[in-house]
Image (tube, rainbow, N blue to C red):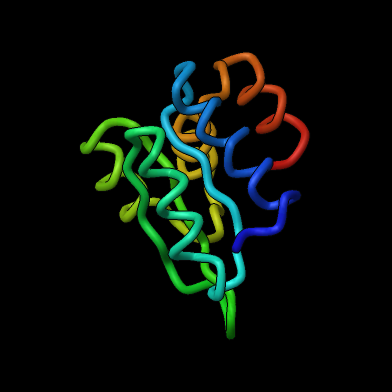
Length: 106
């Protein structure tokens, strides 16, 4: 059973995707993964899990099948402006927000 605080976060991520964000990700304890994926399935969305570290997984939530390839090709730790830009687009940020981030941090 998923704790309410995690369930609410997953619901929020699913709503973001349903309203147009390309993808979202969240770290989840491995013991909750099957319940989380069942919840994501109830929104008719896709999900993909990656190992994060011992006992934890990253679950990606997305709407369109081609997004999975983008997720798999994206760097874990972006270094270049291009890599930051791709991740910004993947998470649904607008061009102005990405530019502001790049100006301040890269």
